[in-house]
Length: 473
Image (cartoon, rainbow, N blue to C red; front, side):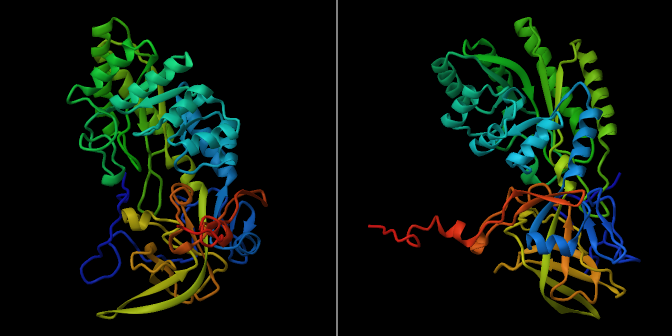
């Protein structure tokens, strides 16, 4: 199994501007099925089609830039993960992308839902999502967030600090309820991913460390509290993960803690969440594991470790992360300018500037993440050339696709599509340079459904008190 590191490979081979993993395609119009949603295809006229709608029609109807979500693809992936992990609770990651419409899809497909802010919880509740199937994350949950979680009957609150346990005890006592909690354990596993999305090493903000004994102390405190109901342990080692070796270590360490808890109390905790954060293909080099293979491996790991510690297999849950929504999304842009840059030694790079940028996908600038791209509104017989798709922002780091081969005749007015944009694009989008955020549009069987409308300048300027005639004394 091979894959690109989440942080990308920004350095080229000596003497070549292209990275070592990027091969010149024989057919620049071909779509790599691995990185596209299932309905993406080339029409006979050469246009990219998603959900039965051609790229130019999509651009005409919703404008550019825009995020397109292949609804059928999303639902199929959700069902596949749920089937692969039958008997487990499968949690959709609200932070990857969430709207009221998306929350409805998640519930309809039988998944549970992770939220990590007041806003995400409010969206889920507005969608009518069953509170018992919601998990509340966050390393600094406020009284307001925790109060709403208790009032609405959120199924589990993943506690992350001693202060949070104290807050919950106060609020639960006031409300006359017992708060259902899981303790987030930091297992010390170094996941093979970008340091910003590795979450189980000791020197970071999440959870109670196993190595120092803090996790066991937190478990005992929650167990003995008259205001809390201890469900079990939560472990999460990172995001964009392609293999299960890290989970084997994490399971061994968390289940050892299960055994220690049982020895101390005479009771066994009922639940274990192994986290997840499984990777998707952003480029041809990425080869993510299939959910069925992951499920088989994780079942074997848990069963083996439970036998070793002499404990019953607890109720299990998993958090696939971007693996459900990431590949279902495509970003669509309009080309504004092109510029060939001489790199010396007979090498050059074509810069393709589009009408979006780091405000609608910060991941390449933040993590150095790699993406793919294609000419979307037509096929081309021109020679593939090394290109870089860049945005409109006043930043040299405003790069959407660092290295990709595009046809040499790409020109202003063309459309460029970037696959695997369903996760963390809209949810991490900003208004940098006072740029309104793009819409999110579901596409299915030729029909378009707006999930989030396009922001306008009026939306942004409404927040400016001086624009609205106010004065600061």
